[in-house]
Length: 192
Image 1 (cartoon, helix red, strand yellow):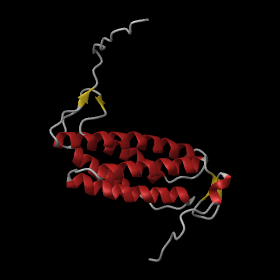
Image 2 (cartoon, one colour):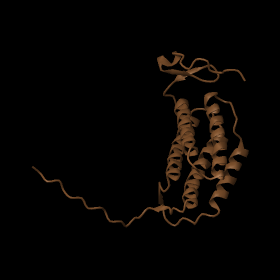
Image 3 (spheres, rainbow, N blue to C red):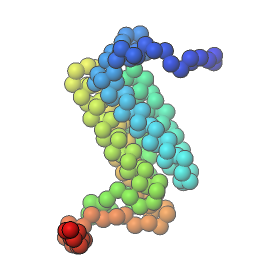
Image 4 (tube, helix red, strand yellow):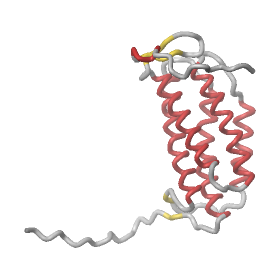
């Protein structure tokens, strides 16, 4: 494959628009670009997670997820173009079931955190929810792949489960949200 980008800056976006893959231009704050940006941010956060020492099964799963997110980004970049199908959603559901099978059932809400890798995974989960909202907003105005929307929905669930899985594999308990907790007491600053 030859070089795709020989020059990184083009100056074509200086007017507040950006080019789509079909050659059209759209405002940088359009719903389509907002969705594309959230997907890119999610993919970057997963890349950060993959830079940590994580179990091989998580690494392989999320490496595949990154490629699918790039495909979803391609769909956002080229209106009416389709790369993601129901088979990818089913594959993600299968991974979700595998990671979840040995986790203790949840009886309480959990707070994001635990190991550094699990904390990043929770960040990715929240970014994924935002990406899903942005894609849904776009779908209210334009045709968007149902499979891609389903994929993002399942992916946020997968990231939640993987965060728990990473903590479990490291011997770290989930951080439970406690409804009946006492607030820390602070000393009032003395007034001069």
